[in-house]
Image 1 (cartoon, rainbow, N blue to C red):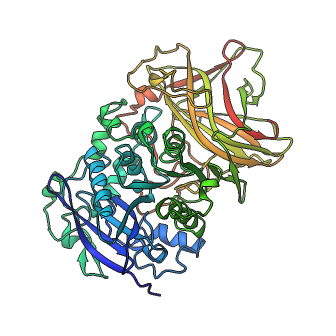
Image 2: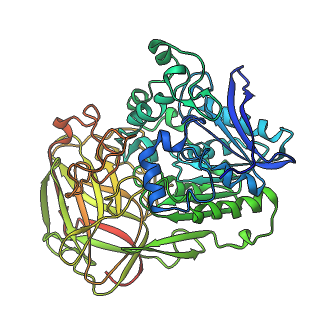
Image 3: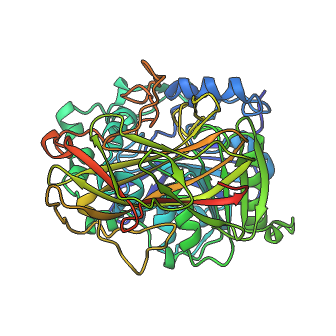
Length: 573
């Protein structure tokens, strides 16, 4: 199959500092049309099946609609397939970000320089003879994250943005979960960015369609390549508190007024889900929608479901089509059941029908709707499996959809402790039920994290269902002293059948699915997937065992009502 498209390879986009970025333009042969633009570091000339074969093969095997109707020659990682968009009257522009692919320069992911580049790319695209002057941003992950950033700068010709699984807060969403360093971005940089750095030249892939080197025509030495990129993992590790470094790589939601479709994944714990929801709630856009779905991170952006949703959104805001999009309710949900998803529309997030329900931890490791009448404490070793508290078997079907939080009273035998909270589901036989997450095939319901020395709250931004920590200073612990700790647990959705039980695990290290030995392996990740995907918190410098390998004690009783609050939509707990 071949669809008639005019392709302009390596269009030159000048930046204000003299750097020329390279872009591929896929467009109808005649006329002026709205533009869908993406800017990122994954190399515009690297085909999806070549760069990400594991993900591509899994996706097309499970979802044949992804590849149907296209030759798939121009399918690239996390950006639109032009063969499915150009026939609808769109120009698709893919820009290699500074220092990546065929664009020269210094790689500095998510930096203010990159944000300015994206701003200038938007304005360049709007001024081209094939452009209607209306530009939309669409893409997954990196190509979604930088939309938040650039929209804060108000590019005059940015007319709509579809943030598909895109984190926002560089500290809380992306690099430090509850103040605990995530090793993901250091590994990601090595595996997915440095491998397509500009300057690899003939050592990198070559694009068969136009005989161009995917990573530019210069063959730089290893020392030259190293000098042309930030030491990203080390820079993140060097900024353990929320600071100007993180703020410069995060948006200001209140400054964003662009029409928005924010699409998140229930299984996106550890990177994107929080940003999609916080962004939807925080932006000043009067036209904004939140969509939440499941399955793998790379799937629904490409399925007919996701693509048709995007098309309807962009047709309305880039073409002015009266297709009823503006009359949709603002929240579009795919409610998760054990074996399927149920589509539902809503007027707000969190859902108006939410019954915020506190379940209190008990000395017999149960979760009950009333606090314990006796004082108790439970010890666990921080680096072991922790302790799990269970509800009684459900007496009827229960839906939990929304954000959760916990209030714990705890002490440590050392001067700090990391708390990893995991919401889980268990069947009537006591076996854990896991779900396909955004990246990990054995994901629990939800995760929450907190480094106890980061326990200080921002009272103005905190909500009972979403505590907000400042992360601007350390408050070390006195060993053995009891502290009240509020923990944010990222949102979730599940309709749990009768007889099942909800569990809350409190532990001092990453969740690990007990059946994940040795764990799935995807070529772009360094670690096997054992329950948390690539979002591990195992850096020995950030988590020295002499500090974070001690004993954790959890307390409860009339004076210390340790509890978890869940968003109950229907049924009884």
